[in-house]
Picture 1 (cartoon, rainbow, N blue to C red):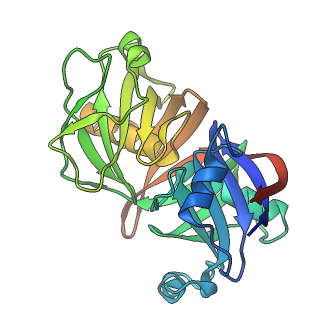
Picture 2 (cartoon, rainbow, N blue to C red):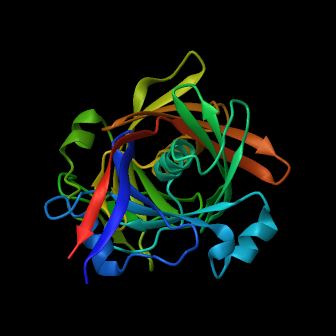
Amino acid sequence: MARNLEFAKGHGTGNDFILYSDPDGSDPLTLEQVQLIADRHRGIGADGVIRAVRTESLPNGAAVLDEDPDAEWFMDYLNSDGSVAEMCGNGIRVFVHYLVERGLADLPDGGTLAVGTRAGVKDVQRSTGGYRVDLGSWRLSGDEPLVSAPGLDVARPSLGIDVGNPHVVAALAGEDELDRIALSAPPALDPPIADGANVEFVVPEDPLVRDGVARIRMRVHERGSGETLSCGTGVAAAALATRHWAGPGAPHQWRVEVPGGVLGVRMFPTQDGEHVALSGPAVIVARGEFVFE
């Protein structure tokens, strides 16, 4: 049975998404439909698919609204392979931009928009050049697998970081090494992590800190999507891991360069522990209608 889907295409530093509105939660895509529309050869192409659904329309919406009654909208995020993701730092900025552009939400300068996600409610504000999202508290996951990938002579130790979804971060010796690794297939983790993880490879700039801001380069393989031009939560995890390795004198302001652009990371104290915020652009590049035959 044919179905027409009104969609928008957006990206944050090259991490791209297909977005559509389903306010009452009655029109989710099937696994096959997600995979088709995200296919770069047979569909529109994207790293993920985002459904905008009112939180109250979800079976678990009451729990989200108990956390924050202002979280009217829920970001239902699926990777390009149809698997479920807890959070997406680039995706939530594009999601908010989509809501504002469509008149589904209002976000004045200085205001905050609460968004429901599978990793809890996240607060988003406007920032210079885009949006800033408070990703909330983070933790060391305890995972420290050795990471192998084509182009690396030997496996590298890593640090597990949880920012609402799982990451392992490995430091490389230099930019040549970062440029030559192949990330078309998932890096091998030893020991493996049961549900998988996003894997980031980082190289600090020399010097690491300029004008009070630490600077690193990063590439990433995202669980369920493959190598992407950017990963928002991965950028935060990479900054947190590098700060951990650098020691107590490391700054709390970070500039992270990814293949798709530059993102900012800031760590700051709150009553429930340290939070990490991500800032960067969000762009809608196309709108249209996709026909599922």
